[in-house]
Image 1 (tube, one colour):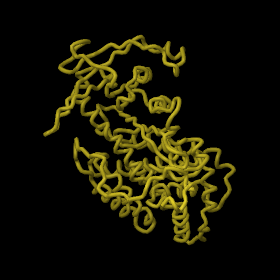
Image 2: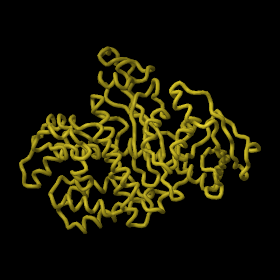
Image 3: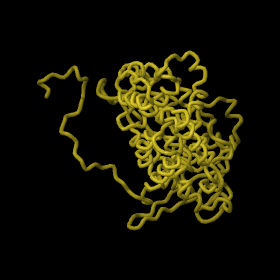
Image 4: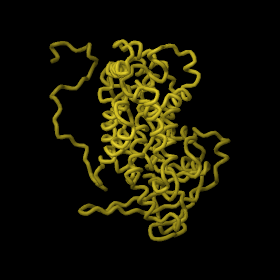
Length: 452
């Protein structure tokens, strides 16, 4: 598990590459970019240097092109080379040439590698578990972005931001992104379940999908089972369970037989004919007891039918860990500042989106390796602490012996442990008051000084 990162660090030291090569070597970048680099011209902004600079920009607290170029210039000087221009124009042009599919391929490759290297004790019943969840992000208010990702209709023109819906599939064992999609916030086939169906090819046969009730439709469950994939989801709010019916397995645990509904418009007749006439599903009743609070009752639906191999208590513990997806999205949107992207054109927005995912996966890889060496679990280590530590260690990659650099990094990352606060309640309230400015209710150019 540790070998791949150590090998990448050693390779970066030997060739004097930009220090982000310690996380992702140039061979992997060239393989992912493919034919896009055949016509690439540039001595400073080579494909791998552009990729590394873009990656460093997404992982920095500033996120500006100016700081990214300054970081590259400082590294060139430290290597005894001529400094590049401080202007950002050339960098932005080269960054624009990076193919979207290439960046996405790197994201998937890194995420899958970290998951494949996970030791067996990190898996659930020896099986890989994927957690699907969705959210939204915004971007600069430009004509191109508004056309591709329109702002909500409830907002006046010029008063809102283009908004996109995202769907992310995480590995439960290590927290990496296995695949992701970005699309319009509203419209036909823009829902989270529609986006998830387009990512089914990512899921491995024999894995388990963990999701909320939004993904508990009959056809969503049938399509996954058709691929040999099990699922654990919360029951849809429109359905009711009667544990006196069906095939009883125990208290609050039974099998039900659900007939195939009518064909939905989005499904072709040929695909509909391949689905079974009915699904055999298991419903389990989970009671969430918190001291001083009212007991909450949840019904979870799963295709894991054997109560001996998969006891009700294990299903409950697994569904409780679905909260990890919310924490992972918080790491992406808050810690990596992906909640509001900065590019002004749609294809650049998508590149920025997937590059954030690449950086996120690389950080998760470092967390997994530190957890493995310190005999901890990956979700016990702080994501933000790892990012802060990594940003300080990478620039001195070439300035210290490899063993000292490696042991210092692993020890520092493993030190930052997140608090164990199960069932905590954190209301969405803020203490700091905002500035007493009035809301923007029309385009800025329509305001006059008398409106103040």
